[in-house]
Length: 267
Image 1 (cartoon, rainbow, N blue to C red):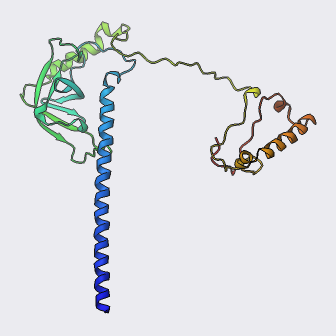
Image 2 (image 1 turned 135 degrees about the vertical axis):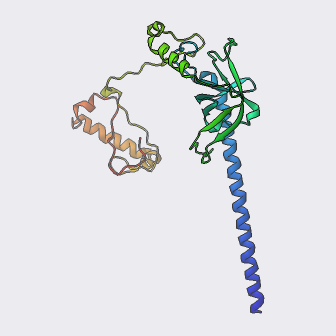
């Protein structure tokens, strides 16, 4: 009899452990699915607001930043990059797509217009940081290798670029905001920074009904027992007539109740 009970207890223990393990695995998978769904929604939201990422900027001198690159997918820009060495471009690891699906474009000033100076290159290999974490975006960096081998940054071009950057007379002229760039939003309301007057001070509403008031009585009592509040108001009127109230409070449209040191959850 004792042996049968031990076998049943052992079976129940192993079975319960299996159920707990199964529940843990299911819960972990559900958490991963929810997190992936959240990241997808965030990505879609960011992609929808791409055209308004730069607010109130100024247009650069055309073709002056030669090392700036555009990573494009389906003939559309989706990530920025920088040419750091011949054939090598650095970008963010969260921009990864298979090399056969993307291309690198340089010498592009306006992404919306075909200007004739564009240089388009295919990507042969992509290396992203081995410790990249898509959840926290730690080590969010990757290298792209250009396929043709003709992508170079000669030293002479670099020197000419620096010379143009620092000596061109056009750079000393005041540049204007391009018409296709969203302007800086202006505030709809003008805020009054002057200190409040005593007549503008009123009692602020407490978030927690059970928070203690200035005299230690919870606000819930005032809410559920209006007679008590009326009684206190009458007492205050008596004190007001006896001129036991500070002059500043007598001119006020409301009463400022100070917050107790041990009070909690009060705005």
